[in-house]
Length: 236
Image (tube, rainbow, N blue to C red; front, top):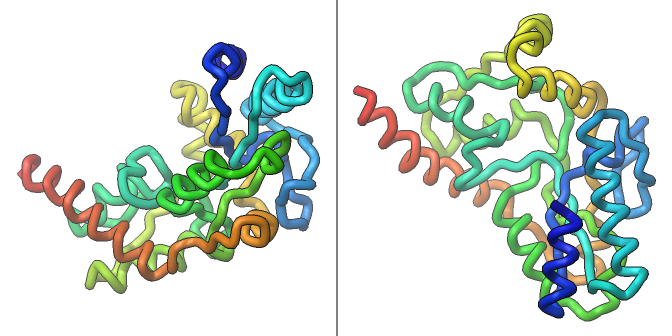
């Protein structure tokens, strides 16, 4: 995929701004992840991401494309149906049931708000050429637990959100029969210690701040009501 993106951008004479996650960086080992964190993947998915990253920046160094990469941790927000705060979370909440979560809800973790990610990519796409040739951590609010994020959702929902954490042994067992469960299990290291993204370089370079976290929670709940509320009505 990355080879095709590079080839298409080169043929069109277009800039290439790629959205990436942080799998290629591996375990944080007690440190915040930033632009200087080396690529030391500790999973098959991370190894693939590292190769893709190397390919992009090699193409930039060779002058084949003007490329950069915006990295973000796990997403939440409007239209994020396949995130940890997506279908399996809101479908239960909108029926008055616990939200199903696959990760430790009390682990400190950076959750990127989807509109912040989109705006960050737009900023990179319109930046001067000095912003290219290296990756950026996209803007985000300070790391918190999924339980704390859920409490903010609750304040705007007007009802408490209960969390149902899938036991690790059950996820591991599911991995024997269901490939996505196996891959999720391999990535749980991101919740085994504080997993914090440092976006200071992006903020300092572009003067760009993330959306207020309470506003983000309010907008996410408004979207969830409209999207999953309609699904609940149809099911009824």
